[in-house]
Length: 320
Ligand code: AVJ
Image (tube, rainbow, N blue to C red; front, side, top):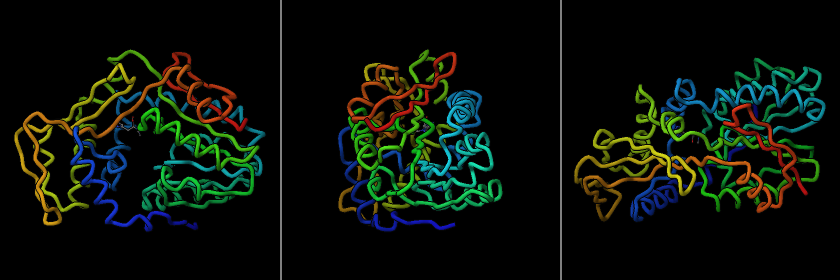
């Protein structure tokens, strides 16, 4: 499989600058893209299998039924999946596509993790030897305009990953995506919906503490880039629903006063006991939000596929 590489252009210096800026801001933050090193990706895979973590349990059957409705339209199509991860979601989708259509499909997994693309690429090659494969190692927020194609395309953005973005950023992202889309292209956008707050909070505070480990892993990734000496055990995992923003927030709360140092930094990073580092937002949507976002991006909302409890939606958007 070919893997196009846009990540190596992102220099280590700019990664460090970004991390330092986030840790110097008030309140402190860390960009959630830094969850996903190898062990972070593995922890996330474990999360998707947790009893409390409901999104995949609903999205997967929804992908299956939606794929059936899409059937005829997938012939001679390039499927571009943003944030493809372990490719388990697209597999569910592809399983519903007849082999003679699959022969005409080229699948483009786009992910920040090259290892994830290589690993899932091997699995897909075995499973669907008749299908074309072309990996793209990129950050879809930075490199979306580089993903160009000639054929009709289906952009897939599953798992409610868009929920990591603030409303403004999500709209900007959709606008950029709209500008690279051609007339016949479409987008299938997975979105986690607003529901009972207890259900949401439970999904991010699992009893086995896997989400807590996933959250703290971002400090290990930060240490490896910045040569800082964060001790993940000195932090508490905090996850709650912020109603005003309609989002689940994850934070790391310092258990004590601390001074974090690095040979690469002139000044140390000071944290007070109880201070929080904001590590992730996971927005939860209503159909009103979905419509508003499509409108703001200049896209036409062709369809919303949802489950009977309306816990998760696949929004289908096309060019106007
Ligand atoms: C991969 C961003 C969709 O927000 O639910 C899971 C990440 N964080 N548990 C989410 C996540 C904590 C997940 N997304």
